[in-house]
Image (cartoon, rainbow, N blue to C red; front, side):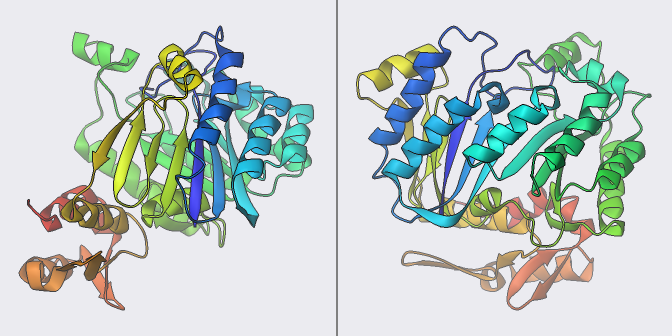
Length: 374
């Protein structure tokens, strides 16, 4: 199983919390889309396994026309071996989704939508500088159904430091609309964002750790009570509707990232493309893929398996193997594991360490405690 990620680095406007690579200028749209196809050609030997998932992320991929998306998919199918039931996801903003556009997306092969709703409440959307309104947030799911989509994911953000924000109302509206998948993220304030500058100036406060914990606990309990499986720290799905693409990341499968700032992983190395639209395009046109390369040690790869595995409902194997390197968590950290279990942070099932809801609150810390120190 392998996946392809296509980074579409364009947005209508900058959300106040976002530090992903994008541009609000579409001046180089056509040449950059051409460069994406060229990179697909240059990278066609990177992956060995057939392609099981294709993911259009960004940025805002729903700014592309159906013809532009179809052209990229045609290039992939022409150059790469793909499975018959390939999952093809498009990230979208509610304000881009008209019934005609959605029908066109369905026609060209998109079979899963990931819609960036974030909140159903007008004050929150305005504060975040989202381009859509609360009415569009609701209507986009209804018209997506009408267009034939039966695999829809939505994003929500919690930990919002606004007295007007009612997280419970957002969660209940989400489950009422019954998307197959819900991703819920704690608001992280990054330094080079509008919120980051406001925080530095003292005009914005972050929610306290206690508030963030309460938000996460409410999210977990609400999702569970409404039939959603908490299969990864930030992700919930109805039965059989987990994101296959993201599950590939968490399971350590190989993937190819196409576009400026995109990352790739082949099991032994990780590469990261240049995060500059114009320079990326120029390099690709000259037949050069502009990336930095990191060769991963066996210890780094084991640590990634620990970190990613603990984020999922399947947990991490107690015995891990990377090439000739083996790491036994019981041998190396047996006393620590006993404390985790005794204090109800985790349990062991079928030789796998799985976090409880209590353990999920400190998942990163637990993972770090289990890491190999080189």
